[in-house]
Length: 336
Image (cartoon, one colour):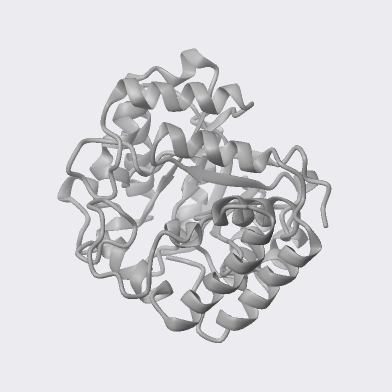
């Protein structure tokens, strides 16, 4: 168990943006400002976004809120969205040199800034040259458009390829990886974590509550879902989460964790977050962090309060491990 009292927490902004856009839960700027107040009250310093979020309106909202005047750092990501059928025409990018430059410039304009903290390649573009993409990333770094380089949703062999290519060419090397990681999705542990440690990279865990599944609010016989939720089946994200979690083994695992949690009057959300902070492979010493998505002021405050509690009792940790054993044979990929 790592001594992770100072584990980094990053503000996940995917649910913010223009009303009616995919995955958007919060459109009111005053409410977003409140969320940022709570985040900073608990010591948060870094906001994570992406060019694709909310049809480009997430970055625009954050730019309008003048995040930099608050002393916040901004990370954003560029998805190779030209290969995605649901991407709006104005947000179609490959990871060609031209599109990487255009995408980064579009993000800077939306965010109303001249420089990012971290610029990520949001997922691998397997239709175009990694070498050309990484060379352009290095040029943009040398031109002063961002401080750090990150990658997300890459397979371990692709991480190694990226890092070796950067090293061999003396280009900026990625120092952080964003990936899905939670108590019922531990496939990252076998190969990805050792690969990242070999190359000196940090890991930021997204979806720490499994898109809300680890809160226990979803029931196996449920057929209706809140608009904008991760499990709304009419959206691509909803289809992904339904295919990943909507299985008897996962609901059995939730039931198993619930029995252990209730003995201590713990909520499932706090058990999931405390497990990730204290009992997973995350390490504050290695610069790892948790990306906390936001659904409401109440939820964000509650999640921070959970993360500020100590490590879990042994019987709860054991129940979490047993729950993982129950689902590991049916678990899906940890990348999008």
